[in-house]
Amino acid sequence: MRRMKANARERNRMHGLNDALEGLRRVVPCYSKTQKLSKIETLRLAKNYIWALSEVLHSGKAPDLLSFVQALCKGLSQPTTNLVAGCLQLNPRTFLPEQSSDPHLQGGGSYSFQGPGLTPGLPSPPYGHLDFSHGAKPLSYVYDGPLLTDCSSPAFDGAPLSPPLSVNGNFSSFKQEVAAGDFPFGLQHYGPLLYAPTHPLDGLMGFDGHAPHERNHAPRERSHAPHERCMTTLNAIFHES
DNA sequence: TAGGCCATCTGGTCCT
DNA sequence: AGGACCAGATGGCCTA
Image 1 (spheres, rainbow, N blue to C red):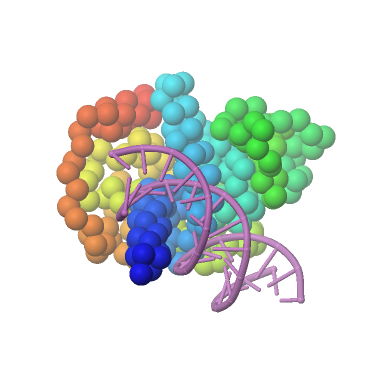
Image 2 (spheres, rainbow, N blue to C red; image 1 turned 90 degrees about the horizontal axis):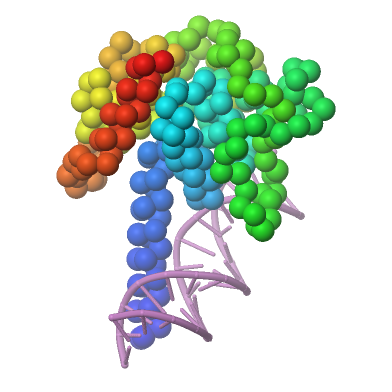
């Protein structure tokens, strides 16, 4: 009997852990209900995302899109990298050195974006890590197509991405909390690029089409303090640049 | 079929 | 003593 009770507690505990992880999935880039990131990839992407945003805050400058995506993808598996690239409507081959024809990407060298990287002393992921020999590239380098997101149009030439993903899944959980012009983390900087709608929040529905209010969340209290200060700072940074 | 991912069970350890 | 936390083992499911 004690063992059964302990098992039930452990089950509940793990469910709580999974719920928290699902919450994390919703706030990192590329949230999709149909193509869920694995637990480990969710944690890695979250770590990269935090680091990339911190870097933006620290530097006070808006990063170019390629640097940002590279930071996000550092240490991620190839499928997850494809997913992130697909979310941002980029061709992963344009920032994966082993797949690029760019002479700058050949002959080794390390990507100068000193991201979170691998924890010293810990084994490398089995799938390797991104190793860039070039610095940031202008946006036109990575993407020369129409800049408006249209999930129905081919965003890149044949790179496998199934099912099609929308960047709009990103930040979807903030939709109910953020007013127009107050987009989290200043990403309205990329509005014309990433969001087809004119309103910065119009595109926040993920491609699998659930609205945040459909989720079974208890109404959350808005926390104004550090979160909003952060947003304000980042908004200012993106607007200035 | 192998490998990745996951949920669950289980026993050990630590904390209250 | 009981609960929380952790890591190892196991089996199921899915995909390449």
